[in-house]
Length: 306
Image (cartoon, rainbow, N blue to C red; front, top):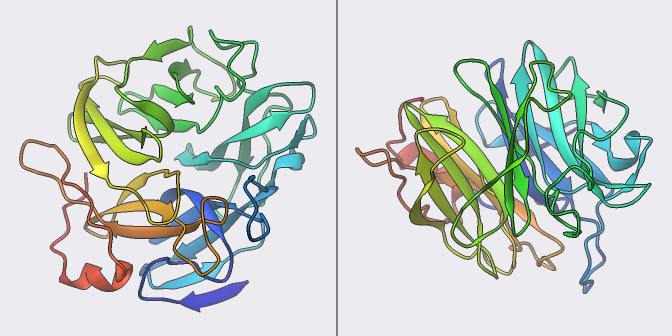
C-alpha cells in the first residue's frame, strides 16, 4: 500500500489514472480508476487492470493492492476500460467493460465482500455481450457502464458509445429484467454517469469530440430526458472525459480525468476532483475546474447530502 498527501489536482500523481468511479463506505471514499499504461507518445489505450484508492479527507490517499484485472474474467482477453462500482446488499459490485475473447466487447460483473477487493467474477460469463444489444454491428457499443439502485430497489444499467442503452437488472444483478432500450440524449458519445438527488435523475455523459460533459434530467431513469447543457468544459490536454458524482461529508463532488500530469495526454490520464453545486430548481452549475482541487473544499460552501 502507498500513502500520498496531495492538496491539488490531479489527486493521484505517481501513476496514470482514468475513468473514475466512487463510493462511500464506513466514512471513507473509495476511488476506483482505470490504469493508463501506454508509453509516452502512444496513441492507443493500454489498460490491463483497475486501481483502488481510499481517503477519509480527500487529501490523504491510501493506494490498495490491484483489486481487479480484465483477465480475472477467464472468458475475457483484456482491455480494462471504464467501470462503475456500487454497494448493494452489503457487498461491492463492479460493472466493467472488457473485450470478450470469443469476439466483441462485453460488460462484466465482479463482486467482493470488502470495498478494496480483491474482486472476483460474479457470473462466469458476460452480463451483456455483443449479440444482446440492438446494434450488434457497433463494435464499441458496450462501453462505460453506469448503475443506479433506485429507492424502490429496482436496479438500472446504462451504457453505450454513440448510442445510449438502458436495461433493468434483476435483484441478483446477474441478469436482465426486461428488454434493452435506447435513450435519446443530445450529443451522446460515451462515459455515462447516472445518479439521483431528491426526485430528480441525472444522466451526465461525454458530449461531442473532444469531449465535454453534458447532462440531462428526468423524473424516471427511463426518461424522457431533458437536456440541460454543459456541466464540465474540456479537460486539459485530453480528448475524453468520464464523470463520477457523489455526496461526501456534506459536499457534492465531481470526479473526472484530464491529461494534466507531465507527459500526460489522452492515453495517459489523471483523475481530478472539484466541487459540484446545485441550483434551487435542481439543475447543476457548471463545474469550475481548479488546480487546487481538495484544497479548495475548505472554502466551498458545499451542498447537503442527497
